Length: 474
Image (cartoon, rainbow, N blue to C red):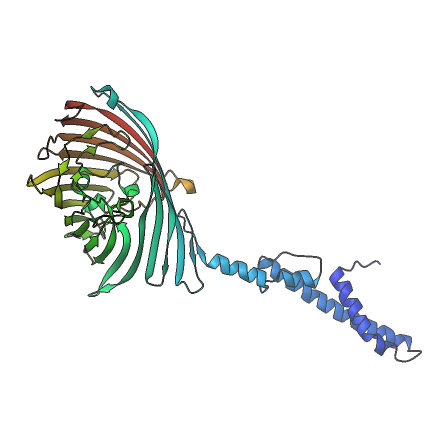
């Protein structure tokens, strides 16, 4: 009978026989029976060790280690306790990548240090027709917004920095440090740097989270001179059914004075409450106010306002407000969410003080409502009173259909108090397809009307605009 012996078994046999040879052949003529007995004992030990080796290989295979016929060296190298496998396990344990995230979060062993890359791409296509002024009937595409950056934390200290590429320029927004703590038993976050101001329901929201391509008339008309971002400090305090914000900011980095003039300083406060809140929804009541001391380099303020994302000729016009010294703005908010529906009304007013012409007012009003057809909760947050990501139940990236939302908004623009100021109205119907938590396709149909008193497009005019947007956010 021929017996086939594996390499590990043969290796063990040779080793054991070599180790016993001095004993077996210590005499010149050992008895044959004694020699055969010792060989049988060694063979039994070899069988026992071979069985143990087979059991070890079986155990390693169950733990994911590859089987090998190259002997004990290969088995030990593929063992779970080997340094290479341990390093792989540590790396996997320090990277968190949830289904709802487009990018991973990296963390240190103790979890105190984290980092997550950030980025976005917003691409638009727009077409306008029906205007009595041929130059207004434009169509085209653009990269509306591109950002690259990241955010992280070291314990309670956080940071975020992103470079924005838009309108043929580069700007840092946002770029700040943050610190999480408590104030009078309530959660609070302090910010230092360039951050998004807390300005109304849509002015406090990332543009990529708003249900429409543009922010509403209330905040667009009444926003401060330095717009939505500013360098300074801010604190946000959150209660069970309310939040409060106070900030002091100067110019955003892209609107700086280059050291030639004093900066514009904006003092802004906003608060909201939820007088009714259940698991099915909530009522939102809020308001905001700012006072702005204009910098020495501000000689005039342009008060025109575009009504679409691409077509800059489609706007409500007014003459510039010259020699401004300061301005202030107020806003009122009323809205709510019930299951998969939402509705918000908002009014904003800005008053610009001048050296020679007293005060100039301009106002904007917006009423909007929407419905998540697929049943998800709307992205409007009861905690902050701003728009956040929609949590998609069946994302396309996991084989689902995504989430669908229909929404409508009416905006009114009133610049009649400004020199040569006109009026404008627009009605927008939106269909949004959320492919997952971090990407969506948007379709806006806009029926607009303007009544300008100055410029080459003075008089009444109306028409239609179609706009598409594809966006991806990390």
